[in-house]
Image (cartoon, rainbow, N blue to C red):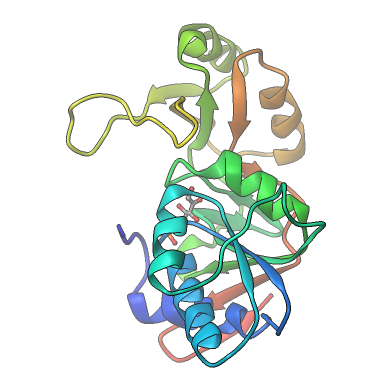
Length: 226
Ligand code: 5RP
């Protein structure tokens, strides 16, 4: 799993801190990325130790890891509620997040918002005074040009996300494309959330405003809960 930002130790401490909130009998949303992966591994160890936990993956990647770790899986159609979700972030400022570095933000938003409690896991490199990271916007492939034009109207600069192999665009688990949209400093994440959501052809964007209940920030020595 690709690792970004801070040290792996900081990510591990964040993930393991959040995984301590997982209790016997819970249905847990399993986030995507290198920090959430540490939480998934810790949950796998809890399952090994006899805890009854079911996981709802937010991506193909988190499904594969959860399977490897022996976590029984379920989906949103099969459960009445999700007790807790643990997920990473690309940037946070106050309670607002920008997610989608792994192009999984559409499913992540569905699962994280359905959870009774949503815990974010991050290393200190993700913290900002004001959000300014490009906002990933998942678009239906035929709408990529019209959505890009609407984003420019909003003052953003969209870039189609290319695969690392440079052999074409990134295609999401849902078969869509991703525009990474730079807006500079985002002064009103809530307003931008509404504007992006109203563009025809936008499947989901990576602004998660007012959703997080706790942010577990890991360092090389431990974790702090915000
Ligand atoms: C995937 C995400 C990830 O949670 C985000 O990119 C953080 O990843 P990492 O913990 O590897 O830095 O939003 O869509």
